[in-house]
Image (cartoon, rainbow, N blue to C red; front, top):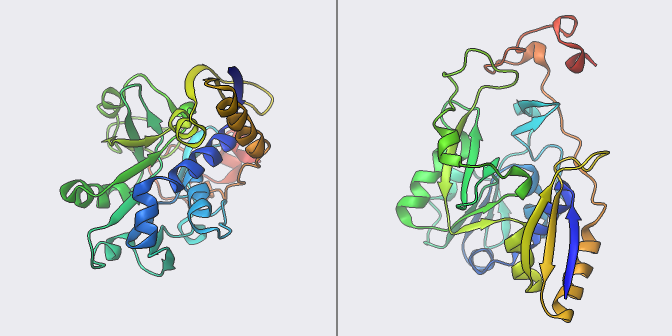
Length: 276
C-alpha cells in the first residue's frame, strides 16, 4: 500500500518527539540514568513526550528563527534546559548533570539544519557556543548518545560547507543575530523519515517541501508498506494534524545586545516588518 501525506512543521516536531521518546537509548536513560533535553521548539515536544508533563512551549526556546530573522528569547523569559535523572526533573544545569554518577547519559539537542549525509547543524549565537558548545566535547569524548531531532524543513545541501561560511565575527551585516554553525555527526539523527519508520514500520520518501497559507515549511512524504502498517501510519499522522505552533516571546530590539543590525534600535528606527 502507498500513501501521500503532508506535515506542517509543528506536526513534524510532534511526530519526531514521539519517536525520540521511544528510542532504546532514551528509554533506558529515563529508567536509570540522565537525559538532558536542550531548549528548542522540537525539544519542547520531546520534553512532553518523555515526561508526560506540560511544557511552556513559548518559553522553552533560546535561539530561534522568527519574524524572518535569527533571534533569541530574552534570557529572563526562557526556561532552562531540562535535566531528568531517572526520569525525574532535577534543578541542575547540564554541566552539573555530567557529574551525576553513572555512564548512562543522553543529550537530546535540536538542530537548525540537516543534510542528505545525515550531518546536523546547530546555530550558535552565544560566544561560547551555548549548550552544544559546552556539551558536545564531553559527550563525544565519552561516547554517550547524542540524539538530534530535526525536521526535513531544515534540509540543506551540505552542513560542513555551510559551517565554513558562518561565525559571529565574519559578517559585515546581519539582519538578525550573528551566529556560527556547529556540524554534528550522530547515528541518532531523527527526521520524519526515521520517526515513521520506527513508529509505524513503513518505508518513507521525502518528495516535496513548502507551501502557502500557513503551510510554509511543510514536507510532503510518500509512505509505503503492507496495508496494516500504512493504515497505522495514517492513524498516527491524523492524530497529530492540527497541532498548534508556539507563540514565541520576542526579544525587544531596543534592549537587545546581540550582534545584529537591528540591536539597540528604537521602535521608531526599525523597518516596518519589525515595528509592529
